[in-house]
Every structure is written in structure tokens, then in C-alpha cells.
Length: 134
Ligand code: ZN
Image 1 (cartoon, rainbow, N blue to C red):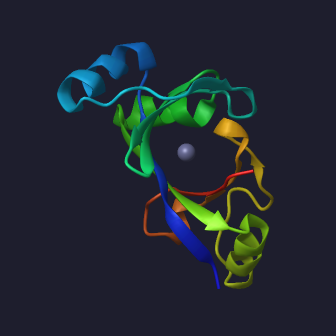
Image 2: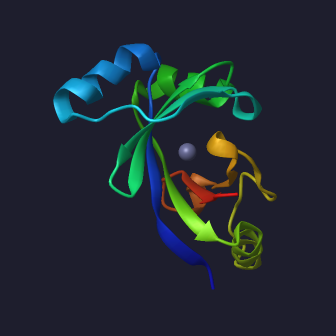
């Protein structure tokens, strides 16, 4: 049984974080929290805290998947991240169910968290990221 704790973040793909940030600040009063280039994922990422959760702005820094996303669909919601307890166990449980995974083993994401993506084919078209804080 997978234990989901909360929505960690909703990720919005943009072409330029510096261009997108003022919009979220001016329209919704959201302040940027942590900003980092995530080398392992070739992305620029900025978290805007919203209560216990976050909006995450992500822009490609050589990430071909994000570049393709922007080219095909333009900026928009890219994925939803669920915080899980025990990401390895969660992945194993999904694998038993025959769920198509993008990451069969967790990798290092933003904030040093362990992350793994579930293929949108398995979820009805939504890219889901599992996150476990270190
Ligand atoms: Zn994410």
C-alpha cells in the first residue's frame, strides 16, 4: 500500500523563470522560495510556497523533454508531485501492478529529494512525480 502524504508541488513548465516569476508575484502575491539549477535533470527550478505545498516553475536547461513540451504545447502544467513515505516501496508496489514507470529507481531531484516519475500512460495522461524528502 502506497502512503501518499500530500501534494508536494504542482509543476508549471515555462521557457524563462525570470520572465514568469513576476507574474506569480504580482497576480497572486507568491514569493519565490528556493531556486536552483538541477544538474541531474537539466532544469532550472524555482519553488513558490503555497501553504504546505508549492508551485514549482521549471524551465529547460538542456532537458530535451521539457524543450519538446514547450515546443508542442507551450507553457503550462507539466506534472503533479506527490510526497510518499518510502519511495522505493512505492515504486516496487507500482511495478507489481504493472504500472509503466519512467524511473524504476529514484534519482536525485530538487532540494536533494529522491524523485521518480510515473509514465502518463499509466495515469490517464498526467505525469506524476513521487517525491521523498531526504
Ligand atoms: Zn517536480
